[in-house]
Length: 369
Image 1 (cartoon, rainbow, N blue to C red):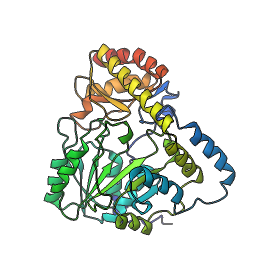
Image 2 (image 1 turned 60 degrees about the vertical axis):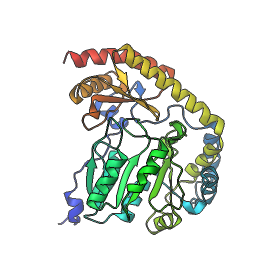
Image 3 (image 1 turned 120 degrees about the horizontal axis):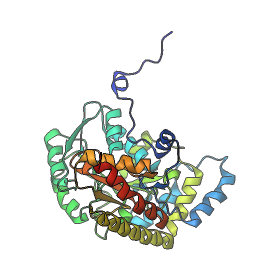
Image 4 (image 1 turned 45 degrees about the horizontal axis):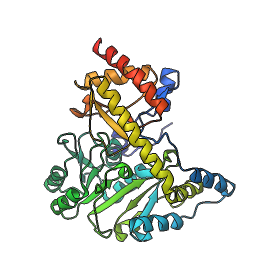
């Protein structure tokens, strides 16, 4: 009896996922984490109006969602100064990136990213047979000039750039990205991941014509709006490119509850402002905790802080493991020299109390081997 006949591309892919989820890690350790500070979720949660909207919508869950997503796209278009035809919704940025790569990348096509940048993008490229070309970070920041130069060298279809960056939290001024676009080769599209843009300083988001065919920008309700479990993100780009998503997207893939919650969250500016303040306060405390233990931190335009452990990747992994054993879930960059850091998500005061108690013990264990 024979099994399924996988295409060579799929058969040759490693059976790996970009991230092991915290729930899987909890099952491995046989206990829940005391502080969940590794997935860059918002522990402050969504707007109460978003929760109420999702609860109200639950009685309508027997219906498919409006596949045009017009209500939410209309609200987003007003906020961003674009038309609804410039916006496509999807199951978080991850889902949208998968569709975007599917649109543009055939087996053997070149794609450029930074070595150590968001691995889920790489996962999608590999899944469609693209060839990844990577350039190093420059002083812990992604390097647009080097990315675009590599794209010209290899005739890339896509360049991926996150601003602010994950996993380091660093960022570029929007004007710098606009200037660098002059060097993006013809026929290449910049996938600009702005998942953390709400946390970034003013001027971080570039001022771009939505009909500029060189750029598509990705945003999400998972971070600042506290709706990671709802799986809802959006992409903004030229109408022709956005329309092309209709060829491949799952038209009834969005949940009515998620759409209703996202619309209510978008309208609750006061809640968003409170969350941004709480995140800033927590990032300040993470920095103080790090400094009290002789460590330094990187400037962050996100809802997390990269803490430099002051040694190499092996030492940082030992710190990470010791924190996990003590019930504190954090993550770290995968590629040197950025892997000298651990990445800690902003949390509630009680989460910070746990971190303050656990970090010196973890450092001592790592130093003592």
